[in-house]
Image (cartoon, rainbow, N blue to C red; front, side):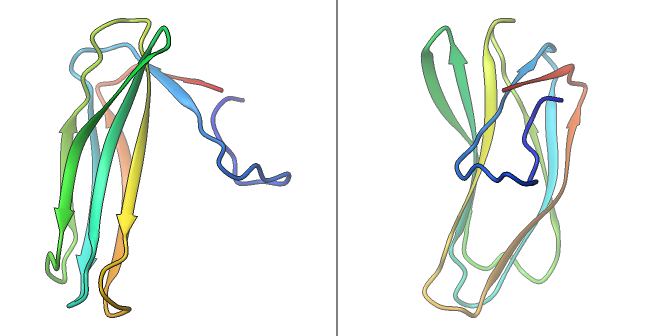
Length: 117
């Protein structure tokens, strides 16, 4: 089995790479950012090609987005079949506790995904 499991023994900070073998790959997910003291949410694609790494910011939202779920539909760009990618969600706390961020239903569409450790 490849990828990451939240099972014992836990390995804090563990990450996993994947290979995407399709030019028309998209990632979909739903996010909810509600509250008067909302911080920010970023979604990044980290690409590694033979030790050369780059980071692309695919989504950046900040502040109250309203009390509803919003869909993100983001193209994933891979320029070479040997590139490995991983994705990173970064949620940043706002000015207080009166806000919540949630992410749900992450789906890869039109992607040939191979998980690597």
